[in-house]
Image 1: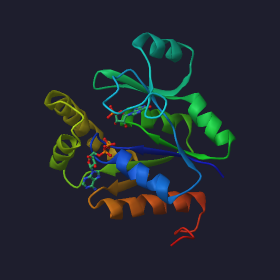
Image 2: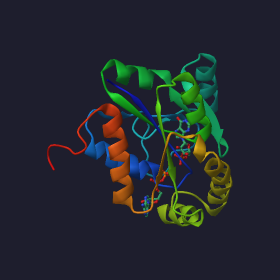
Image 3: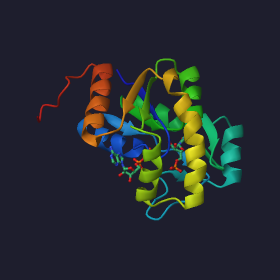
Image 4: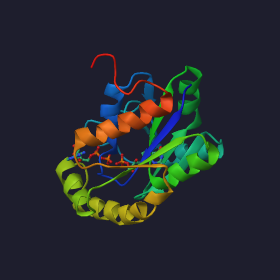
Length: 192
Ligand code: ADP
Ligand code: 5GP
């Protein structure tokens, strides 16, 4: 049966990296492409990384009730289009949402059957290091993200699953095991 997996946690913790590894390891999973009003980063492509919308277009789609969830994060708006989730489930694919905590709460309320995973850093300090190393955000933007991270870390007990992203391959293995178990798949792929 197809399921909705919500992966959340503070910026820089490694959500995107872990999900990319998960999609390599488990077939039949599709990533929901979010909408956002933030500017594309170098190398990001509309329709692949995000649906990049103007503030007016985002607002119009909120009013049209097109979003399963949406939130303001670090001065920009982000949201999951209902169509992204609906179309994948209709095609018998499970869907992975990579979203921040406010959005995760909204999905939990709307879809109690969604599987919610919080990715935690081994220490709060490491977030700054990873955001700096990623090189996609200014020092000011990193400060804002770290302020939000404090609130997000305080919410981690709300989530059914929690994975500490210390060693990437170990954490990816844990995420893979959660997803395989929830989908009723064998714990290791045939190829191994
Ligand atoms: P998020 O999607 O949560 O904002 P990213 O996946 O972009 O985070 O990861 C932030 C940075 O940390 C990236 O440069 C990534 O390569 C690095 N990273 C992710 N996981 C680990 C890990 N376990 N150990 C060290 N660096 C990591
Ligand atoms: P970034 O600007 O680094 O791409 O994303 C900033 C934050 O927004 C991250 O925590 C990311 O998970 C979250 N985010 C991305 N897409 C969505 C979405 O559709 N909804 C919500 N609520 N958050 C999102």
